[in-house]
Length: 436
Image (cartoon, rainbow, N blue to C red; front, side, top):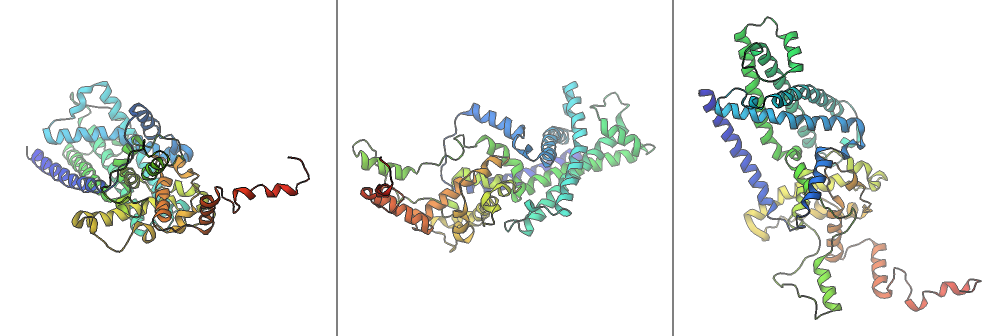
């Protein structure tokens, strides 16, 4: 009974802290602008199954893609066992999900095998980060804290797998001959015979309890670290894929304010005048101007660098890094959000997302080729945010590269990108020795 009380108290504390972290992020979401209406749920479900659960896009990099997919699938299976541990801890039961019979054997047996696979994959990931010199893990956006964050998360996952295997090994050694023994443990049974043979039952019981508590406490710690880590994508990547933009890649969002004005000019009687509640602003200059989907993208970014690695602008030495756009957006909201919540819209820290985090040079380097969108394993749309920040520069600050300014001026004056009036546009053909 005492074990149940202690477990329930720890679980309650964990849920309170985790609830506060989610509430904090929820309040930041309320600062953002609307995005699109969520519909076409069947199509979204198919995208979720293909991209998220099927990990289809991550296999563009076969070796690391397979390793990551195995870790993801392993976590899905092992999480069922973690839910059982919570039930057992609160109710004082023994392997509560054992009532599932053969299904339970499949789940537990798969989890036992996946524990070893995940453990080996994590060792490979740690080796890649600590030993190998991989360009994808570099960049000015990846500060020392980000690298430490990655090592911490990988270490916690490694310890989770070690404690899970230790718990299973002790359980097999203690109870395999008992009538109420539950589950199948293909790997742990072999390890148990190899390492735990001849150990007295009282020591095996201590080993089981130590690993049981270590595993569940590591789960609680890991869950509460995630909201403050780049690994928050453990919670947000599935919703982000489900809430993906379903429009064709590269389709630019219409600026509704501009569209309404054009409609009023072309047909004043049919057009509906927009409500004059507040002066419209164009594009994105700071964190409060982004949409909820932009913010969800930034929270979901795994910082894997696949987007930057395929960016043609980045490959030619320009400063643009699609990953940096997401990292900077998340960092700015983390800084700006509390100010807005405490002091309202008038809060001013003399900083903005544009210039202080993302420079105009980075924004104009983007070719909007959407290679980053195609490559991203969780369907983040970086060019959408880049385009909105460009719109702010052009429409609010009249700042654009010289070539673009000249083209826009020519379109306004001459109806075409060239510096000739419509009457003179065909003069070039007068010197051709041909009849037109």
